[in-house]
Length: 156
Length: 156
DNA sequence: GGCAAGCTACTCGGATACACGGTGTCCGAGTGCATGGGG
DNA sequence: CCCCATGCACTCGGACACCGTGTATCCGAGTAGCTTGCC
Image 1 (cartoon, each protein chain N blue to C red):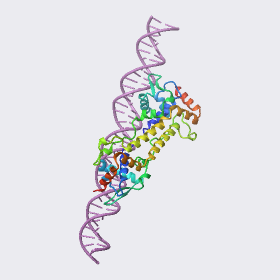
Image 2: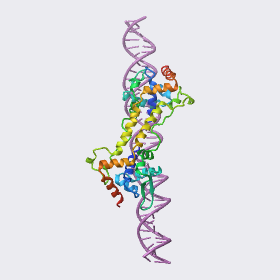
Image 3: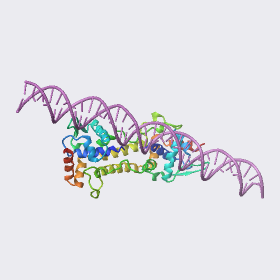
Image 4: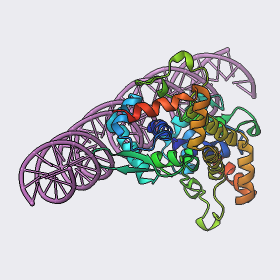
């Protein structure tokens, strides 16, 4: 999986604590990562409609929805693409003993298992929202942690 | 995920129906795939101890265990590697507001969610065995399908 | 006819090139704010 | 004092190189079975 997913998730969590737009540069130096590359991930989030980009002097990125209605799966699919990791190439229809295409009404058992596992993975990511993550951060790192991040993000 | 996983799984399923060793070349032409590359996947299965390779004129690959005791997860981990797709880079310990390492007793919430999803994915693959796949093939493609494959594999 | 040595042909195994997607970077288009002049 | 036009600095967005992992391939090491000569 793309490593930028982690950056995007952290960005979404910190964006929970601020209302004003935050530029990508600021988010990059907060996490000490490449600003140019982080911009790529934020653009992906923007295309998916998870964040709203505002231009101009005081521009940046803002969450479009309530953090509770943005799931981790949304972010992962926005950055990494919605296509599943496994794709069946229909091997059973190839080779000297190929089963004819008209006999393949049901998907290949292997593909079925893989699809099921992928669905379980996505379901696990769907049940957790960005708000849950923020709540978890507050529980572990202390309630003031996000407030301090918010203050640092908003002060020039 | 590596595309060779699909090939390896199909090979394991067809190996269910034969007791004699089957060379990689034969398996490759059965599925109409590159013999050289399929050999790589079978070597991975051999290193993982899922199949036993016998050399010599009538050599090839044989399953080492009962098909019912080989899970799909075993094959996937043998070919694709056992390491999870997501790896936490501890972003929270970087940047100007880095949380000190001694405060990071529990894993980062994001990593926790990702690890849970990965566990769910693996669990879904662990509950299905190669024997289950073979049974499923027999149910959909007819009981004689695997027998015909076995006959084709064993006849020169 | 039985046996053993040698040979052949076939197998796996690891080491070797190529390609594509992810990683990282850059510069141009667009926009909101600040400023300065005029009414 | 208020309003508007201008300029500017800052932002995003997409287009451009680089690298690592997966993909595909090849040739060498090793071994089981067949052949053939001998007893």
